[in-house]
Every structure is written in structure tokens, then in C-alpha cells.
Amino acid sequence: MFSDYVVTVAGKSFTITGHDILMTAVSLVIGVVFWIALYFSRKRVVVLKSSSGVDQLTLELSRIADALERIANRPADRAIASALRRQHDIRPAPGGGGRSILPNLFGH
Image (cartoon, rainbow, N blue to C red; front, side):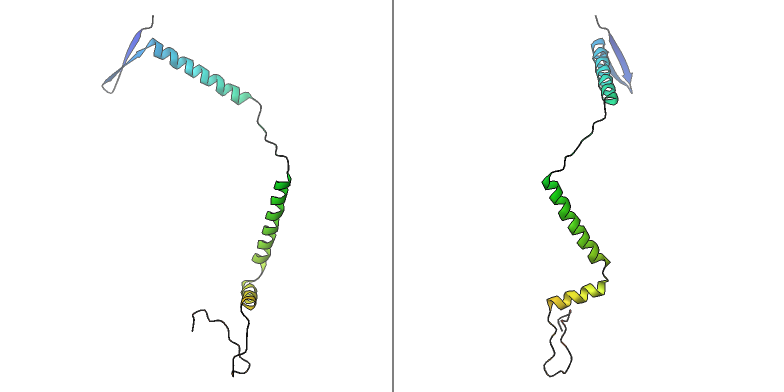
């Protein structure tokens, strides 16, 4: 019923039967039909309805973004100085008059 075909490529011989050719053709036709069906089908649209969880998350993220923008817009020197004032009390040195003791970064 089906005939055999011998194909020689780079010194190697391959036997291709009529059944192999038929099955390859059927697979290609089915693949093309599915591709056409997907290509010409309606475009898929995903609609997300708002929920209280999404609204809360949006609110919190916007608050974080606003705070980060405020921090980024302040000059760095003012931010460092205010952070140092909050973390360490500046006290007058004992017997040193009006001098204050600032924390030393190097430990001296």
C-alpha cells in the first residue's frame, strides 16, 4: 500500500515510508488549522474588577511613594543633621565651656 523511499544524507541512508509521510502531513495540517483558529479568533481581554484588597494596596504604595519622594527632594545635609539630632543628644562637654560632644564616626 505505502511505498518506501530511501534518502541518503552525508553518507547515511534513511528509509522513509509512505506512512511516515502521511503522518507528517496530517500533523502539519492539524498544526496549521490550530494556528489559523488562534490567529483569527477574537483577541482575549482580561478585565480586573477593583477589590478592597487592591484598593488598600494601591493606597499604601502611593503613601510609600510620596514619602520616598519627600525624602529624595530634601537636601542630604539637612536629612543627615536631623537624623543625628534625633538619634544623639548633643550635650555640653564637662568643663569645656560651650563646646558639644558630637559622636565620632571613627571611635576616637
